[in-house]
Length: 129
Image (cartoon, rainbow, N blue to C red; front, side, top):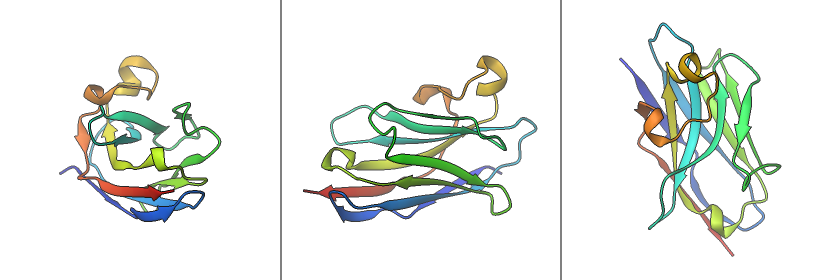
């Protein structure tokens, strides 16, 4: 059974911080790529940050570099997205995603939406100016 459950979203003023959590319950043979994506109303879903399961290999969208940090607590089976210096344009539904084949096939976790097979339900982040 595969499951991703996000939490931690909410409303915050610009300049504030939030930490999103993704409880990961996966049973796969291969190590997973784990990622955070977001989708604002009327826009396509975009990749925000990724981490290769059990490693320090991370990547970030240019729009969040220096402000967001993805991390993983393997013991708690949780992936985090620490968001600081939030801007109104960060307002979106944030999704946790995983894929057990992306790294094996491409040697990167920088996959597009369709390359991630497993998704959570999302958590809303709203940043007011």
